[in-house]
Image (cartoon, rainbow, N blue to C red; front, side, top):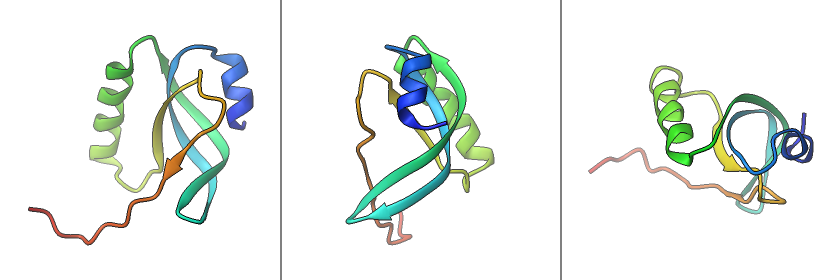
Length: 84
């Protein structure tokens, strides 16, 4: 499914989803296909589940967003692989 379809099925909710197909363009991540993992009334619950999944499967492209947003605005960050 795409973002518009997800928004129509789950209006005004927080969602945790995985990007099944995505590409980069001018420093932004554009998600073409989405797999819904879960929906939530509270954003903190979505973030908590995100953390649990990301800890065990860090290679999955997971996102948390609210379906009131008409477009996903995902800005890519470049990591230097240095943690302080």
